Length: 239
Image (cartoon, rainbow, N blue to C red; front, side, top):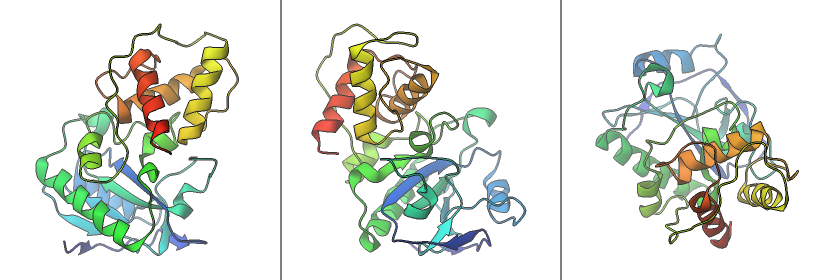
């Protein structure tokens, strides 16, 4: 893979080596428009890489530098996600402009790129996440159409396939020990979801983000039995 240089001025200095990869979609009508915005000094946004639908990879910011892609975000208690991550923008119009499946050439390029990045830095599988994971109240990307399972099968990221998991669903407005345990589990996985015992709107956003990543067949913000089983399965992987 030979990335195409497309330098962005939007970066600053890292304070430590990256130990995360954050995947995004561009959420703009064209890849050209996304590249222009990510290179615009007035926009004050950037990423390390952009992957086009045809598989071309553009490099905007050196991995040794801190790109500005995550915004207000959190994972495993850390809030400077830009400072600890490599950001990959994947060209896709997103939910606003006509969300669609990611082409084969694009996904193959993303997998290869993630593999290359991991040869240079120590990045655990549990630290390969989506923008919606680190900012569930604000973001939906890369969304439920991104093939997280395939990425994990290629050796990058976490995935589980639990057995059938009956159980009463838990949703917004409910309170009690089950909600507390659910929130504690999400916190252990990495989400900013301090246990309170009350299933509030933020918890709904966290459940929705979790489902986009780990249960894409059902994205409704309700923690049914299978959603909870997938969370337990991921925690058992030692995250």
